[in-house]
Length: 120
Image (cartoon, rainbow, N blue to C red; front, side, top):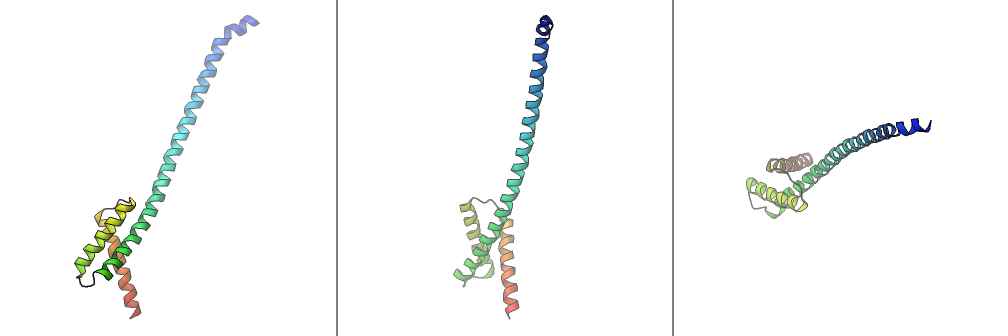
């Protein structure tokens, strides 16, 4: 009986090692998939927060240009608001295209106009 166990020992060891290898592969793949999902969730969460920050800074830029550059015309005020917003976003490490910044500033302007018109 002992010789049978001794003869089977290398096969049993090989099978156990193969099972451990397969199990390790499955675990590592699962961790990798979870990491991808977590990265996607964090990116989405950060994008929402960055968009909120973009709109807050654009509103600040509009207010800044509206109060500091009263004597300038509309296009010049817009350029000042865009410059302010771009500087603040760069300071905070938020990357946004010039179109996104302009859209946010224009949104702040339209909201301001809507507020002014409803008060009249």
